[in-house]
Amino acid sequence: MIMKIAITGAAGQISYALIPLLLERFKVPIELSLIDLPDKITLLRGLEMELEDFCFPNLKKIRSGSDEEPLFEGVDVAIFLGAKPRAHGMERSDLITVNGATFHRQGKILAAKAHPKVKAIVVGNPANTNALMLIRGGDYQLKNQVQALMRLDQNRAETALKLAGHSHKEVFVFGNHSPTIFVHGASNEINEFVRKRGADVIKARGMSSQASAAKAVVDHLDDWMSHEDRHYSAAIYSENNPYGVDEDLVFSFPFSNKKGILNLPLSDLEQGMLKLTEDEMQKERQIACTIPFSN
Ligand code: LMR
Image (cartoon, rainbow, N blue to C red; front, side):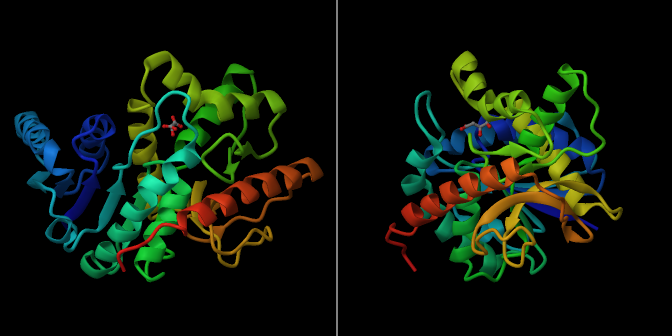
């Protein structure tokens, strides 16, 4: 069976790192729809040429361009990398007004054009609120088919734990992909490491994480699409969650691809951190909802 994958922001650096990893990890025949802004078309063409030259046996077709409607047609997986990036010194919430309207518009198109069982993963920041806008743009039709990437935070937490000499069987992060995130059952040092890691990378490289973000997308999709029961951190639509979190957010919980949200005990300190990250997301939602939408 062919897997049709659409990628927005496809001319960017996460995409450049991501596509070879996707083609290596998923051995099924793949068709790619590469989407980016009109001024990125030459870059997209260059990417297409390189992908042709890779000679991946499972890459069956590439379509590219800026016209989202035909490029989302029938896709099984949609990966939303495209968002205005955060520069050094900018907070994620500064991006909400820029990116919210784009995701709302794309959500409408995705719900109308994609395969009815499409799985959509949002990476572009602020990822959780962008994912909520994607869901709202599609009139909540895809509320259980949209997740925001938290796997980079989970992978960072695993690294921090390993560096500190701990081994945890399962590592989960809660809340927003932002400095209010927290790692279940972890020390303050581990939480600080994870919270600052994205900004530390930006400071050191002058741009945000790309290869590690690409690897995290592939890890996330691999778990989400697996036939086995896999447990991982995913920001999902928060309706009916067992933690008492506001039910209209895209919030990171411990997640099973077969059973849904996992209900783990939280300490009093963690209950407090849960509230902080929830408050932040409620504020982001409020900002996002002041944007005039085209539909
Ligand atoms: C990251 O976690 O590396 C990025 O989301 C940071 C950012 O704001 O671009």
